[in-house]
Length: 89
Image (tube, rainbow, N blue to C red):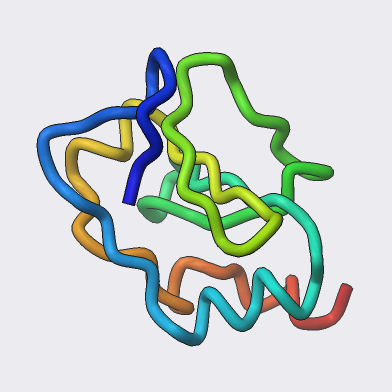
């Protein structure tokens, strides 16, 4: 769910799966949903920094930033958005 900051409201709620919540908590870092040639992708903010126009979803003390371009199309954030190679980092 989005917070009520300046640019963090949308017309619908985005649900984060329990697996993604666990993934974020285990890594204890912020993530960003951004656009890739294969569709939406979830990357660490060390790889893809957030933008001021991103929406914010709080997972404990961490944040999932969602590109304003992706937010209008997303209903859920699932583990299939995490690139396979990220498991090796």
